[in-house]
Amino acid sequence: MNEAQHHGDVTDPPIFLTGLPRCGSSWIGERLSRTPGVRYRYESLNLHWSPALEGTLGHFRYQRPGTRAPVNLEHAVDRALAGDQSWKQRLRALARGYGSAAHRRSGRLVLKDPTALFLAAWLAERVPLQVTVLFRHPCGFAASILDLGWPIRLRRLLGQSDLVTDHLEDHVDTLRATLDDPLAALGGFWAAAHRVLLRQATDDWLFASYERLCLEPESAFSELSGHLGLNLPAPPPATRHRSGAASTRKDGRQVALAWQTRLSKEEQGRIMGPVRALGLEAFATEGRNQP
Image (tube, rainbow, N blue to C red; front, side):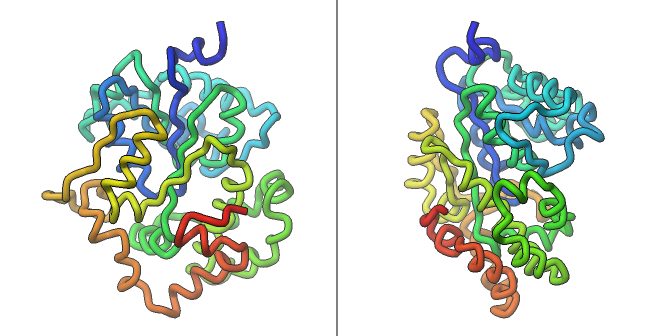
């Protein structure tokens, strides 16, 4: 029995949907959950939703491809690839309206988890995965994080020696110089994360722009559907809104570029400084020039 069969996949590989927080993975994941035959699993490697990982896997942990992880993490990955979930995940699925996809026992597996984005290449070595990375303009990412007050800290990345050695060594001084400026540090976090992902990506990874999905939904969702081999129609214009900044039910046309008025030009410049320094400005704005 091969690895894909062991994890219950009969034809297509599981989809690993990731990217930084606030870049649309919950939105796209919940839309995928409405596709017939999809088994949708929410953040199976996030310690907040899988209590067994407490003390083993912090958010944004890097695992060097080709290495063995702690036993608890190895076990959690096997459970995730088998479609197992914690009771907290099951309750969330019911509350958010994707209970059927979350409880489905067969079909195409979709694992959505931004907290595990630095596990993508390591996971893809264990079992064939269709890695899909959603990315957002650095200023949009930073503005959303600021609105929520989430503790996204660049020090968490720079404190991981394997991550720095493998991917960030040439830029450590630039990134450390941002640590005393919260806005620049968020830009540094964005730049560091996407440098790592782009360096690890293989030809079959997809990088999908949040802004394009919001502003050009017909073409962007068509491309995403074609890549994943799923029928994922573009969403209709939002007619209702959940309250709160963390909502996934908003009119994307209104929020995609809201940072342009939310942030001053000076604030935008502070965020984009490290992005430019790491050579990622063209990728941030156009999705090209991958390093």
